[in-house]
Length: 137
Image (cartoon, rainbow, N blue to C red; front, side, top):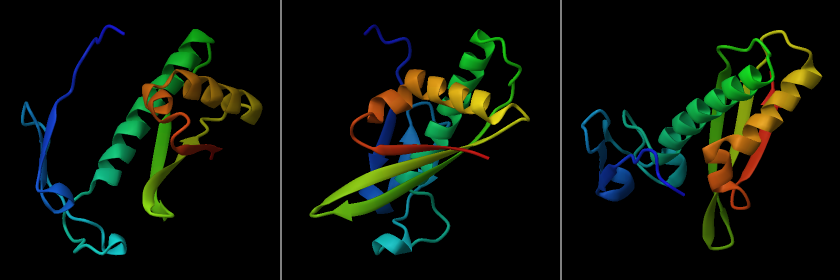
């Protein structure tokens, strides 16, 4: 693969540290959620950042497949839920993508979502490693 763009981020201190992008546009304090034994509070966490990135990327994939199939769905709204949990001694992620239907026939909207899932870089990156479920609202 020839890389078209490379994002760079630096994490210092792990889940209770700080994360920033090399260009300074992202600069966040991190806190482990209380549910994972951390302090929680007024800081983000890696799962929230992953959910935001996946939701944005998947929304763009929906726009692309809709455009290619000549369907008017210009501003898809995608909500991503990223869960983290333990299986035996390892931590694993799950993802639920909730797409708001703009008034399309549900069968068509579901087809577009499935097609988007096939081309979305995030979906391809986690394929076979993370359970991803698609939901139409």
